[in-house]
Amino acid sequence: GSGRMQRIGFVGLGMMGAPMAANLLEKGFQVTAQDVRSEAVDQLVARGASAAAGLGDLVDCDGVIVMVNTDAQARQVIEALISLLRERPRPIISMATILPSTARELGETAGAAGIGLLDAPVSGGPIVAQAGGLAIMVGGDAGLFDQARPAFEAMGNVVRHVGPLGTGLTVKLVNNMIAISAAPLVLEALRIGLAQGMDLSTMVDVIRASSGNTWLTQEWDQSKMFLQFALRDPSQLEGFVATGLKDMELVASTCAAAGIDAPLLHHSIRALEELGVEGFRSNLATVLEALQSD
Image 1 (cartoon, rainbow, N blue to C red):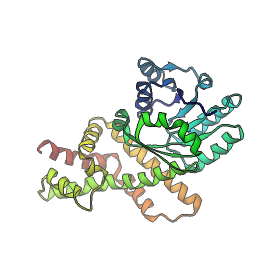
Image 2 (image 1 turned 180 degrees about the horizontal axis):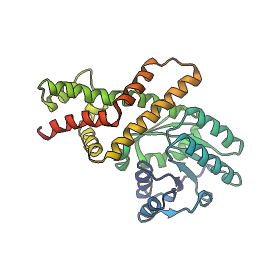
Image 3 (image 1 turned 120 degrees about the vertical axis):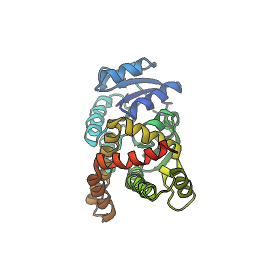
């Protein structure tokens, strides 16, 4: 159908999913939420959501958003939803970062059952998700995109339809390839400057106005918040490195399957693995120490 999506099923209330679902509630959408962790559902119910005992409770929604963590989880949940929604087709919006080929495969299965599927991965991280400021890049049918747009706009401030199914994921992954390669490099560069007696805010200020500007320096206030947050909570930092490597591996398997040569990608993966959580933490600590004295 082409009705407005007012009642939304939401599967996966993790670090990203929880604030995204909360923003839908805040903007007046009805949300029926499902997560393997009941406490995550309870927290959202306290904010006005309905709890789903299982995926079967989502069939009455106007559309279902899936924000799980891995490619395997997304496949499992979306295949289950497709069989549940056969009787009364509802669109499925996959917002997890998975392989573009998985989205296209699931799109064929969904299409055969008369169900529309969009891939709509996000960029920005948990703090940005809370503020409703995510970038959302969407692949799939343009009519379906228009139908889902109000929901996307409740969760993000940059919403782009980028092409057919799978293209949202492709642009998300190449974006992350740059971001994840750049972040440790920027920290290392700042550490080198600090070791040479430079003042941190002076360096950031000049870099921001120069050709070395990246998201980290461009959005320095936000970066500082994120970096301090990551240093205070080791699980945040581990999550950042693990998610970074997961995204890079998704790009690598996409390249391998398509026969695309990607030497710098593989170099970045090796560098991140060698740096590890400890190396990242140590660069981070040095930079944030300088922040304290700023």
